[in-house]
Amino acid sequence: MTTILVWFRRDLRLEDNSALTYSLAQANRVVPVYIHAPQEEAPWAPGGAARWWLHHSLKSLDKTLHNCGSRLIVRRGNALTELFELINECGAQGVFWNRLYEPKAVVRDSLIKQSLREQGLMAESFNAALLFEPWTIKNQHDEPYRVFTPFWRRCTMHLPELPIPNPAPVTIPSFPKILPSLAVEELKLLPRVRWDQGIAATWRAGKKDAHGALEQFCRNALLNYSENRNFPGQFSTSRLSPYLHFGELGPRQILAAIHEISSGDPHAGLTRSTDTFVRELGWREFAHHLLYYFPHTAATPLDQRFSDYPWSGDKVLFEAWSKGQTGYPIVDAGMCELWRTGWMHNRVRMIVGSFLTKNLGVNWLEGARWFWDTLVDADLANNTLGWQWTAGCGADAAPYYRIFNPVLQAERFDPDRAYIRHWLPEIARLPDKYIHRPCTTPKEILKASGVTLGIHYPLPVVDYYGSRAQALAGYDRIKQS
Image 1 (cartoon, one colour):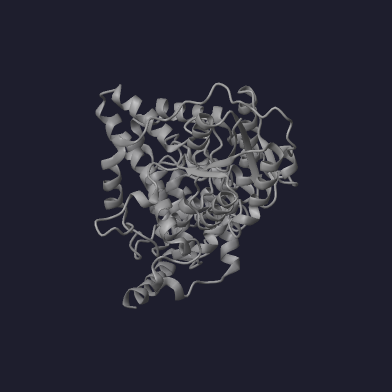
Image 2 (tube, rainbow, N blue to C red; image 1 turned 90 degrees about the vertical axis):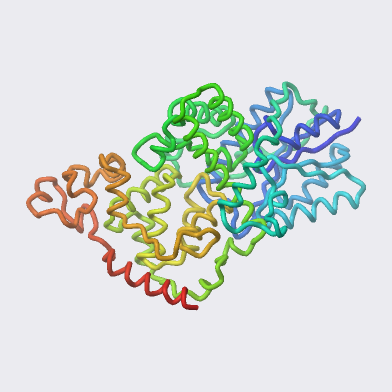
């Protein structure tokens, strides 16, 4: 009787799970296992919001496995040690898993594979997280891409070759003995001080809700995605990022769902929106591609000219930004949305990132760390790419001189003021004319609206134009270097 351990990490689903599919084809018995080892991911161990999601996702996976006649074995500690212990307990002949691409995970998994094979055990890893693994997409010089457009052009050539996602198994042959397992609650992933009410009210983790979110997006928002995706006050984006990060959905599943819808509807707008959305999946691919080939970028800029950039260490300004107290409503609304829901609209992520790095002069890494702890979809590759792109120090970065004007951005992408009024009720009664820039509101209108600047809502912490000029001067020195 062949027994195989399937080591779940961030592939918390049964559908299109390559390691599980291969295990079921090779083994008489399959033992699903999750090993909690955050110390092996330091300094990028899961943040508070991600731990909340992980708790509920593991509970959902265990329930799904029970429905298939199996269960999730949960352990905690050193991954290699726990795998060997479990192998001894059940007499397994090998361990299969799906690959991760973060620097620490690559090193650890290579060591584990080598150690298992040295003991005569099977050790195989598979792709379930990406459309294309990093080493399969290179330029004509056999080097990694550093610019998105040619990278994605090469990827799109191979999209028709992608395999059809595998369905979930109906049953999983389980190990007959009861193997020791921790309860998910024993991992203590949920906060002791319950600050997570807003996240719990906004999200439901797990396979069922992942598929529900995909279906809802395809039904309600995909048709006009290309036109509406930049408007944070609308339901215009997929909100699939946390499901993708934890592997409750795989990118091939999303691509298959999009293809099924687009091929069944000849509407030109749908085709255009489909292309735009699939391109966003391409940015996710590019982020993992970059982190795999340039692992240092999780902590240092890809553009080494920025290594000595004189970032401000102003903790007061950073605290104002993190608490949504900058005096710039679109920035503050975004930071309030993040704190309460564990998520932020992508357009607003760019605005708040630009404001932190280019107007407040704070190192992009400080913003990346804050996002890492507060986002339910905190993903090292995406987080790194996004912050370095916004700061101007990464691959395919926005030109260093591009500085988002938070007032103009708000006027363009929150024209009905719905987003700001929702997240900043303290200024919701201000007239449309002034809500994007409260500091320009006449005193009599402030009084009639019940708003006292500096008490109900802060005055701007910096002058936009002065801070912009200072940032441009600093970036000019970078250019000359």
